[in-house]
Length: 460
Image (cartoon, rainbow, N blue to C red; front, side, top):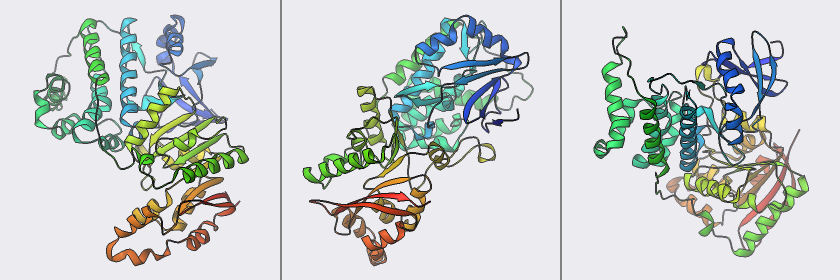
């Protein structure tokens, strides 16, 4: 154990734990789970899931009487479910149901259905907990059913009826949105939907009735495998057909931008030229919308993180990832003014966005048409955003819309009587603030626009 760093989120499952050793994520299997592990291994269960792309691959490192060490395929950047767009969330839910069906078909079961067991890797959702499987016991209900409702079905239904931002509620409920809360938040008409009534409202009523059964007087329900498969199929069909329509300011941003075609092309060529000059293989695009500029980079990238505050923009990006089978682009939802914090017990179970992006260490950061929103919408002073970018960016490609830019003017007008306070929003103050943390390597005016592109290098 000398070189092992125990993962702070890995105390919940007695079957084993995750640790970091020499910079690699590994998993220890405890003796209590040996019987399951060896059965899954010998019957080809794990290999079948690997081949189907449902479970992250792992290889066995060591086997002793006291522990088994496996090393999963390393995932460069983990996203959490409160950072997914609607269709990403939907794909993760369907993956979990596919796994449960496969398990039941082979006389096994998924013992937990936490959304934290899924992340996105190489363009699709993948299950990352090799110890979440168990033996099926005849007539025993799916023990993870309630967890699935709280982690997947509930949030997706809330997204439909109260708005897609409801998915972000999951950051406040590490164990899933409570059933009574789900039931109370949904409109009355959902109680007349037989599917939602039985899977949410009736379940919440049952839990409320029996949540003080400290003596264990409630008889354990029995449910046949056929009935379980019907439940899984019902959930799968409902979620698979689930669609939402939402309007947003940024979902079709590039169709209403104030760029001319020539200025748009120049901006694109500058980004491409600078990324190639840097020899960058990994990058993060902050406020990257639907990934347009990343896709215009004529260089083979190992990994491109593209985050945006807008669900529709991220969904468009995700649909392009699927359509183009792009394994190197990872879209996700982040509000730069309020990025995901560290949460859970001792605030260490799930890492903040900043901690993860610093660990990822991108070769370059893109911040295109972002600074005016940070400064004028969020009131973040230039030195504050400069410090933020410098905390994880060795090289920064940033676009500065001048005061005359129409979008800047629009934002300034919203300030009312405080508009004069933002007189500091100008090129001189921007450069003075940013050169505290960065050196300016190149600076280029985008023709036919009021915008300037900068290539910056962090001061060491």
